[in-house]
Image (cartoon, rainbow, N blue to C red):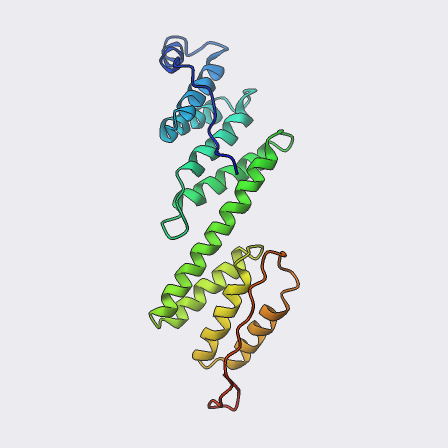
Length: 217
């Protein structure tokens, strides 16, 4: 995916800021705010850019640049987001903003790019859940691990991490002695009819050995 934030970098950000301060009632002030935001965005100053776009969509919701600003605001949040192993507050913020943009601007020409970022962001959040579940499983905190598997399956059912979450959940349930529930989870993981083609992780078989109630582990 191409990097977002390729905006106006003409070195005149100060000029637009001065115009906004001197003529706050001008019919051009919304365009000046948007251009200033794009200038900051082009310089990869995501915080200052976001502040201008927030100002535009808050104070000038009827502006002809409002939808462009809604999308650009999501881009600024997205650029501050981090890899799945780190805190995902910025990713969540970006997804909230992109979904707001998609809802408010149904005819905007750049929707496809925003939809792609939303899919990528949801996949990142799902991976974060799976990583957390694996960590708890490694710490022998199996019930906590199951909770994060359930969170992934409930909130990110379209993610490519679904099959791995189901496999992990089944193994955790076996370790917890919840064999019937484990069987149902494992069966769904094996069938996986609703998952996208990218989700193709195999279910590894364990060697069979008797357990307390006669089921095989």
